[in-house]
Amino acid sequence: MCSGRVDLEFVFRAFLNGMDGVFIGGCRLNECNYTTQGNYYALSMTLLCKKIMEHIGLNPERLRIEFMSSSDGILFAEVVTDFQKKVAALGPLGESEGIDRDQLTSKLEEVAKLIPYIKLEKREKLASRLGNRKEYEEFYTSNEIEKLFTETVSYHIDPARCQACMICLRKCPAEAISGGKNRIHVIDQEKCIKCGTCFEACPPRFGAVTKISGGPVPPPVPEEERTIVRKSRKKEAP
Ligand code: SF4
Ligand code: SF4
Image 1 (cartoon, rainbow, N blue to C red):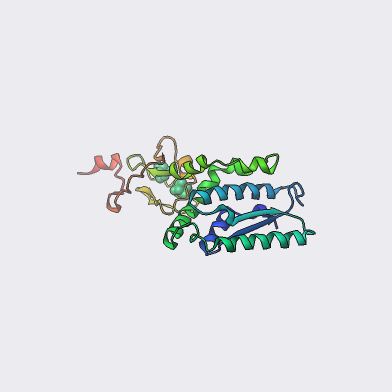
Image 2: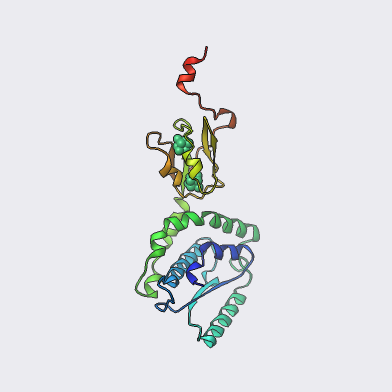
């Protein structure tokens, strides 16, 4: 019902599924039928998406957003025909950009994996309401997009500090943390969506979750070394 519902993920999923272009149609700006003005969100999201496309070497012209009303049938037909011609002239996704199929898939998958993180990092900008379209055009810079990829945050559980309270495991929305009673908890970096919930949730007296910006994440503790031996038990041992 609303262009504001179009998610970054939908666009990259379309490209991953082999689409050569994505067109988003929204109601005219300032003519939202509700109070949400979701079309502004869609515009901001599209411009962020275009910058990410540029970053991975894709032609941003493959993505277009236009705003019109239900009475703009002729305009809609003209705009979509024009877009279709432009995308056809560009050719298959990746090919005209000099990116082979495997490279393209791996780049798109890398972006798709980072989308929750990107949305979180850019949530304030995505929700911003600027004065006009021109201001939006200059809203996202290449430099900040570069940083999203080079200074990506990762989370790691320090095995020496984890007390196996299981709070992070219960709160993780991606089921990316493995652990259990008396077991050092470990984050599966492949599943982690970098939401930071574990970082916030780990009790300060333990402070076991660390945030790493742009650097390598230490390897996980081997399975057989994850049992926590409490001091009291150590004393009891013969
Ligand atoms: S950052 Fe979020 S997704 Fe990743 S392990 Fe922590 S809670 Fe789970
Ligand atoms: S919340 Fe902290 S101490 Fe508790 S299991 Fe997770 S990392 Fe370990």
